[in-house]
Length: 137
Image (cartoon, rainbow, N blue to C red; front, top):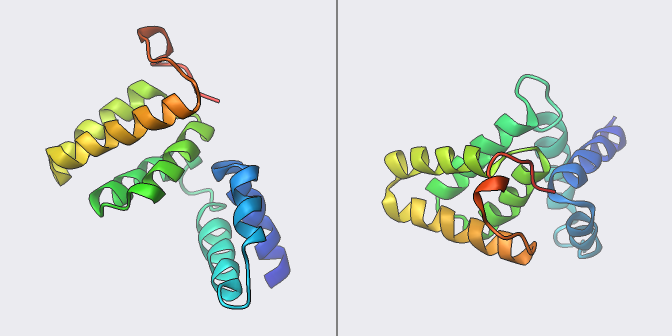
């Protein structure tokens, strides 16, 4: 059962975060962090992310809200990329960032925009009105 949960979780993890990132992380597994990698892959990525009660897009929105409000910016950027993989548009993210700003504070909203613009630059995506409602690959 555990190997099946791990493998299912690993597939979801790769779908959301990207195969390249996950493979790089898995290659860094050692005797110290092996149990933790197994734990998060089974519990986070299989039990939670493979649940059908919320869509992956909804889970991405929830994750971004939590990470932003707890100032976990490297993880925020990672999951921001995952949100794009899950079909989130820039217009949806702009609305989400307004809500985050309202409840977690304007400085947190500023960081949301900063990390989003950094990620778009890294992906060589120029921001213009025509892409705001499109899914980003």
